Figure 1: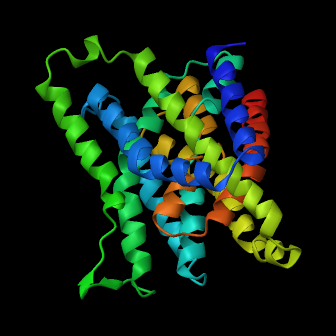
Figure 2: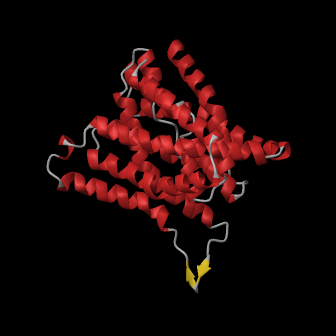
Length: 306
């Protein structure tokens, strides 16, 4: 069992714990930690380690092209949905899981994973501006002017990841030899701890759905699920493949690594983003739960046939 599979067992355990052992206090604490601490720390540590450098320029361009085109397609496809549902569909269609699972699959088939990690890192860089655009774009079709004491209320927590991104990236260049103490093992350990808490929230959100959602409500989620599934399993890999070819990325290793990442299920962190931006969190949880094993099987099948 490699380290990524071992970590995966801990992630499953965290989600299971959140499902069976949650209570009101732990839900409040984990929700607070995820929004006010985990997301900012995730961005701070990542950019403190790497700065704003772009090493694989073609992979970076591929991530940009994929994100923009996929975002435009998602906006067009979801134009008839209400904003909260639309937001959930868009983020789960666009932001894939890049933690543990794709790397374990690649290792099992004898692939390296450096380009997969690079693509994932660039998708992380693009995530913040895209999320801000989605929230601002969707806010045009719903009332967002919430006033407190005659002033518009500003949700500061939404801007913390941006601040962390800028501060972390800036300190990378201000602190000499920052990577001498901020090793890859330390960063991976911090990221694992953060994802464990996020998965705990995923578990208790899932339990809430199981307890409270009726069959009629579940049928209402069928259409969003179809859109997300089509995006993740069909549109995403086709688009990534075309973008790679257009950019002249034709090596078997590069295509294999990035295609596996592109075939992954929605990111677990989408659960926190959906709550932060007031999207429909139930759609995010259900589609992520169902698509995770399906996408893994599809990715493995792709590597077997490729």
